[in-house]
Length: 434
Image (tube, one colour):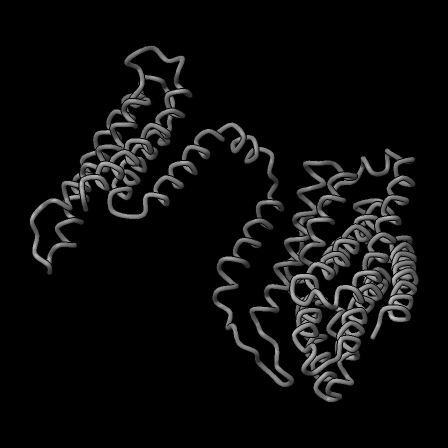
């Protein structure tokens, strides 16, 4: 390591300590002089001490075989000595103030460690970790307030969702199993994660933004991933009367509009020459869905008491989410079977099956098959068939799960989007198709 790099890395180590120390010093700015175990100067020195300790360890003469061990021993001893000092003074500060807190001691140890890593590793990672540390320290009141307000069902659902994503997902095999291309267990689990995430997002959005804005924000965000997941989540809440059916149906309309526009974006990104045939029908359907959403929101606005009383009782139910994900995987296999049985002529039929679950997968696969296997017209018809199938599936979901006025509103939504989108598609093919 040359002199310029060494000075630069020590400067980052010092900056890490100054950044964390700024937050620590500001929080105890009203304390009398000499009553704090560590402030901005101590933390700045802690970061620099970590960097200097790492520099000294690197500078010590060592053999090739034992070099790493020598470095580890020197740094370990320095870190242990520093930790003992900061822990001792933090204990004395706690006793004098009459409270219990390990935050200052832990922050000091982390400052030392990040200063050392700035010498030995990637300076950008060390600096980023310092920013994250400072943000966590500064968000003390917000985090404590959030913990006080969170309920057990919310905490349980959040933990389950995190476990599904960061523990369950990496353990599942990422290879298809079964006939007709099989089912990828990881993809099925991803469907379950999307369903659970959309449901949890809706719960959080309604709690913090209110029924009206929360439902629409959650639906729009959920529609980016899966409008089917939004439909299932809202249907369950309509069935348990956790919200006004029309307000929940408006959320499905927003998610559907996002889905239509999402398909347009995928086609534009992968094969722009198909856009002239795909875009008119989907944009028309998206505008229709948004029109229904606005109309239902205005209608629902007349009865403010009803949407103010919205209160979701449970973010999501794990067994039902996993069960529905398995069901959707079965639909995907059936769609592949139909497509393989009839070849190119069965592309539309296969797209109808798969489109019940995953419009994006159909869109990407049809675009990739053009023009070698499918013509432009065949590919566009398959994409539009998948979108229409997804739209019709909302009627089935509404009738099977949501029932009542929610199911009726979804039927009206699907019919309107199909009629307007179908008319736009007919005009497009009549005047623009080759």
